[in-house]
Length: 99
Image 1 (cartoon, rainbow, N blue to C red):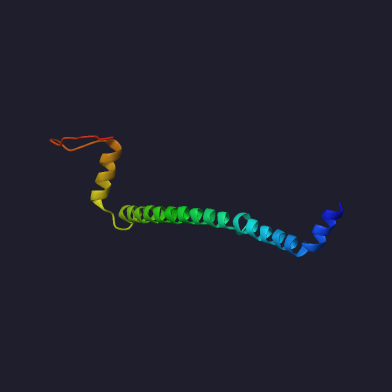
Image 2 (tube, rainbow, N blue to C red):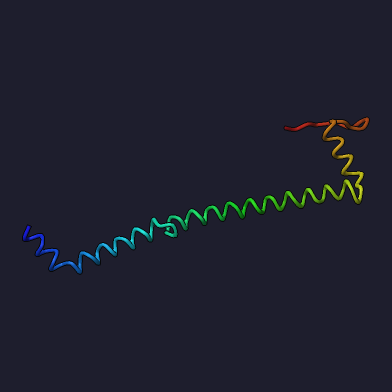
């Protein structure tokens, strides 16, 4: 017991500093704003930016279809939708359906 008190009394600066360093190291890697959390947030950010790009492409495609069906009526687009939905063709046409 005497040796333990002597050790703590003589090396208290080293012991306290080692605990402080250990605390900072664990928070650097595992804290709320630590390295692992940063990597996870980067991964989520990349996923969300990819999703945003896909949604912007779909949105522009839908805007074009909406314009083709409402303001400037495009007969070719209507014919394409009609053929796609009802699987119809003109006389003499060969119809090939691929899935």
